[in-house]
Amino acid sequence: MLDTLERRVGMYTMFQSFSEVCAFLDGFDMCSDTATMNGFRTWLGRRGKGPKELTWWGLVLCEVDPTLKVSDVCSFSPERHQEAVAALFSLLRDYLRTLGSD
Image (cartoon, rainbow, N blue to C red; front, side):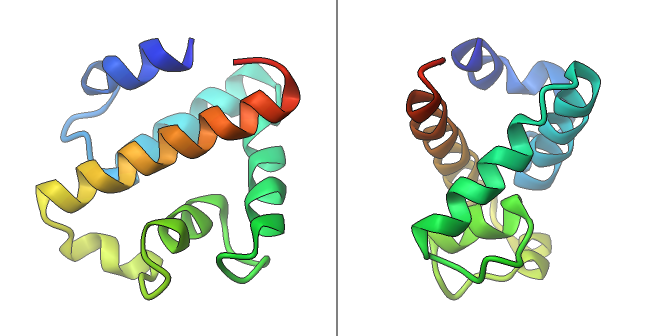
């Protein structure tokens, strides 16, 4: 299912930006009542790439570049958005593998 979401992210967001993809995944997670993204945040925090108190999307940005802040997303180029979205889906795949479900 994650592969389908990633391939068709443009169907669910207008500009395929990192912020829009994160908002979509949060909404999807809330509607599905799985709390996957809460577990993802905990998993990311344990990786130690950013402060544990950050949101999951903030922790993903720390994985892309430790100097990034959530507010930096406003000035991302299309290429930087694409890089962040690709990192997000890669990290989600790694996380889901630890759960034994992808």
